[in-house]
Image 1 (tube, rainbow over the protein chains, first blue to last red):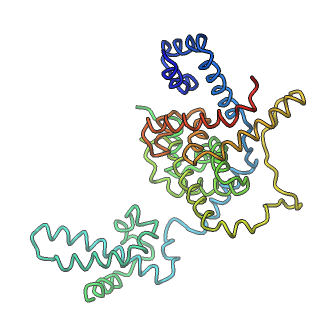
Image 2: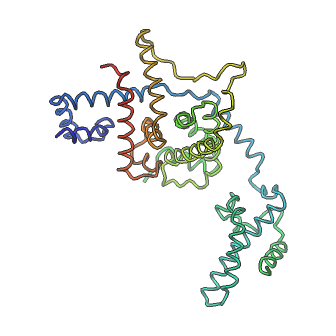
Image 3: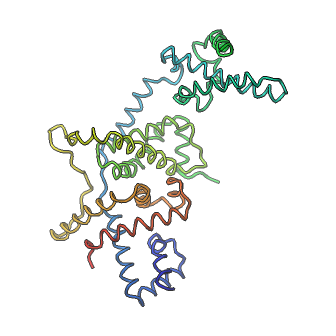
Length: 172
Length: 195
């Protein structure tokens, strides 16, 4: 083992990742080469100094504090129906975004059946781009559960409102 | 293949178990806080940010897949939130510079609380104290990716492969990052190490 190979093995030796024959060869090299031996001792000592340096001790109530914060967060945002706590404009935006996504997906399916809906699809994509900032803001859309469970929201979503929004989107 | 204990706990967390969440938090909050503290240098804000990390874990628990190691997932989220905070601070640096240091309720500056050092002679204690100061200073001069790698490496259960995942690098790049970081530490600490 030459000096370069030896020094390339410092990390493996320090972290116990080096195979035994390589580790033995490195140690034999340290004994024979004063420069590599000294470099290894510094390397090892610096790591030990870092590894043994005191760490910041978290507050003793950290875990309890997070659990309280979690309770508070959940009280603010109950699991069911929390969408209804949003301002009306945001709910309308969300509904429009969901509808646009659903119709866009549906139109892709229709296009595959050779139906000429290219214009509709293009318009919907434009709407999607407009709605993108809203969509990105909506945590619930990441799982798209809202689409699957749209009819199960309590109180139920006004489907007429969705239809009207869809008409608005299509007529512009 | 059986799940590792953390993944098993996280599966329970996904089902809404607060007890499992508390167990995971108890195990990991210290390394998470320390990793954040090394980047933002403020113990109070490090805890606040760590709190947000764990709240985020709870909020997004349904997205956890048992195929991913919990610690890798946790530290990736912690690192991303930490980077966001550092970027936010960089944007508001001018404002931050005008802020007085954080004070405790009695008006004194918040001290760094560290584990009690083991009993040692006055000379040894002084030398050790100086060395630890230098370690902290050296760590702060490292590029973020090297500093994070060092903090993760110190967390004993984290193999190179998992560190690579947290850093979003290849294994060979991670080895190189760790080596460069250790070389820098060696050069910076050499004058303070006993021959």
